Image (cartoon, rainbow, N blue to C red; front, side, top):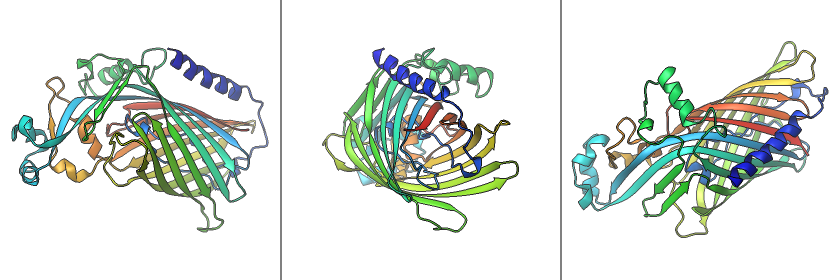
Length: 402
């Protein structure tokens, strides 16, 4: 409980400071860049390594700036075990069957195979801090910290993202009664269990706090790189510090921004970002968890934001929509011969924890910001493909100059 109190009390004090600031009426909506919080999902394994996202600025901020992001995402997939045959002939044999029928084609107890075990349940609370450090008019350094707390999602710590709210929505609004067999298990419980193909096991329980790592990004803002567009590119280093993954990741990204000026001091900003990550380039533990066997993980992000001034022209309001796509954690070719096995309890989504490791992840984020001296952003995020990202995620971010 002390972790939870500290976690929320810290953010509440910062938010109070933000709302209590005097309005700065000199801000110009025409010069405003995209107001975007950290939208990377609280994926139950993705929280433990580096994942990059778009940087939709047209220039360095000019001052030292601090971003504080608080996020809450509900994750769920029932316990499931899958087998990866070592024998090429067995792989070819089982590939003739549909994935859900393969367990009946062989005796998995006698099989020479690696195995994966997955179970995800809970609400992941994330606290991310990002410090922007301008170097000069064309270069900028960003330093970030990411940390997470697993909770059961009980009221009042979780309202929109709790199991109760999600199941009420399914039963009364959309989805039908218990569409994923969530109610066959205890609600509002926190437990993440993962056993990788090397027999390393990870267990995160309700109340566990994890300092996941630090991130360092260098951005270059070349002038007139593409006429009529803003552009920047970044190089990234992530240092993972959890007990499950002590390693260094590297990455690169490119970001394109276009501004459209409308009448009455209104603007539309659009952005497109493309990037890639090489995880675990350097490993500090020989028994790090194997969260991905793809050599690289790529992402594509697009965003559109509408900006307008309040009637008294002292506050900038921004409404935006963001789409984020990430490539699969595991090689898709493995799914041609992997053998998932039913757990005997759930039937509607029994395979999701395994099969989603072989699918691209994508989700939409709807955002609202208002800017005075500080920028405050609220967002809600939905994974419509239910690919091991949170069923629903919410967040708030404050950004201010130091």
